[in-house]
Length: 379
Image (cartoon, rainbow, N blue to C red; front, top):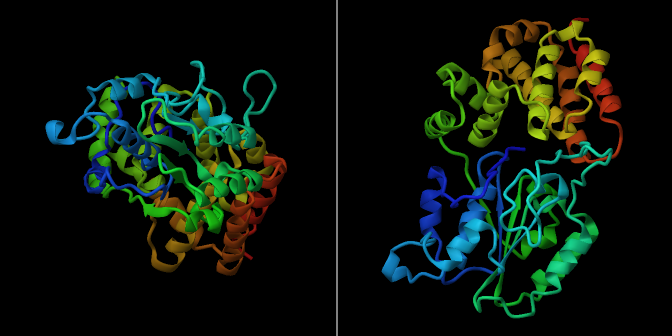
């Protein structure tokens, strides 16, 4: 998962969301909005920008825009002290995504992502606890601190277990007119249909390739002392399916050699996995599974899916979509591919993604997947 914002600063509207941002009528908002789309395109950033705009106390006719970034409400939002904006995140994200709206949360160092050790031998939860949700929802019938709207931002929405989802549903069915729910999902298929039906669904698009590359180049000039090569930018954008924030995190971690935090660990592990997959029938599946076992299982599955997609695309059309820097090797492997077995593995990976939060050992599951991969080639 991309770090969509990681420090306290004025929230900026990403360029590919500018038209959408201008289209919102801030004076007539639905009680619940559900933003969904591909991970790593900035959905959380957009949700924060909208939250700030809704809480901005400036006169729109005087300023010409919201948020104004100058009123008391905007300053509170930027410093993390606005009492009417509450963000609910799983523990595994609280140290990595913006903590500005985390009610009562002290500053903390980055923590590990899904299923990773937090340094004390404990694993951070990847779910939003029902007690946290109840504590927030229990206060929505009390007037807001500033006498205006109260914003409840939940990300990712699919991190609510079934009991927590049903608790949220009750509040959506009997909404408080002064409370707006801004919900964000990376995996809409995992959100309860009854919750989806109570929200205005808005699909957030990824930017064009040209816009993504331009934004990525300007971001990296700020974040890195040494410039990334254009071919590296293009290859990484492709590998991340056009998601610019994911591409940024990949390149920054690669240049800084940082594999200690969750993002860096996932990036380094997927690199190891791609190198192993490029060996085709000669893959050392046991060794690879051991090396990547601490990475988020979901990241490994996505990597395998994209590699397998490229293999099948190369087999059928002679093209590669994601791993273009490995196009020659993929073409060689595709010539040995048994398509029926590849399609079976694709189905297995798709099913695994539906149950990727199952507590089974990542190492054991990856050994099974990689063994199946090894058997795709030759007779």
